[in-house]
Amino acid sequence: MQVTLLGTGNPIPDPNRAGPATLVRTAGATVLADCGRGAVMRLAGAGVLPFMLDAVLVTHLHSDHLTDLNDVITTNWVMSPVARPLRVYGPPRLQEVVDGTLAALAPDVSYRIAHHDDLVEGPVVEVTEVAPGDEFTIGSATVRVGATDHRPVEPTVAFRIDDDATSVVLGGDGVPCAGLDDLCRGAAAYVQTVVRDDIVRMIPSPRLQDILDYHSTVEQAAQTATRAGVRTLVLTHYVPGLAPGQEDEWRALAAAHFDGEIVLGDDLTSVEC
Ligand SMILES: [Zn+2]
Ligand SMILES: [Zn+2]
Image 1 (cartoon, rainbow, N blue to C red):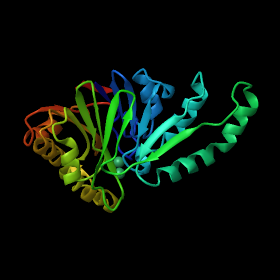
Image 2 (spheres, rainbow, N blue to C red; image 1 turned 120 degrees about the vertical axis):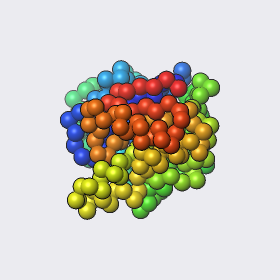
Image 3 (cartoon, helix red, strand yellow; image 1 turned 120 degrees about the horizontal axis):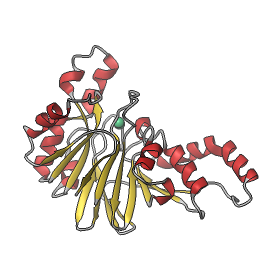
Image 4 (spheres, rainbow, N blue to C red; image 1 turned 180 degrees about the horizontal axis):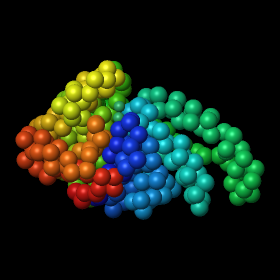
């Protein structure tokens, strides 16, 4: 199983970091988890086009995790050699988001159908709204859904993908909670979005201070990894953006609470698990 951080950025635009998105490739499944700014561009960088995806998983409906869903939908539709529905899994109200996205794409869809003789119907998106405890299969992979705590954003979920006798948890945004601990228990890898509260507290912006109470710090992510006994902790969605040369400083904060392997870095950083 290979896990690739497609986008390691946060909502603040960064020329070098795309928005939150992670690619999981197993022997029999290719899965995109969240699709933030630049997700399709980074997918191409990883050698994957949207029509090669078996599914898209959405941890929550914050815009930074969803801005490029429209691009995934359109590129899957236009580039797929045969009509291929896009399967998308996520929390309640995902259908509402997809319906709104398809409504915004309606003019484009009408132009392309009118222009291309071999394009006779619009994009088909199969939405499955999930809840903690749900389990489903994607190709050869089993996916389990767990609860996360990103309140006041509700509901939010994490996904655990088991395949190839190994596993990865996509934790999404949120503070530590029992649901996330349960999902992570014994996983090979755990991908968590993180903030540096020590840096953010020094920035005099009330809107930035607000993010501290609903994101895991680097230390909290490491503590979750230790409690759950995971082998590899993968940090992403750095707030503030991880500056070149700071990697060891971030890694040391996590290493104070976790003995296993710690992975962090630029977009397209990959780990085998
Ligand atoms: Zn969020
Ligand atoms: Zn986020």
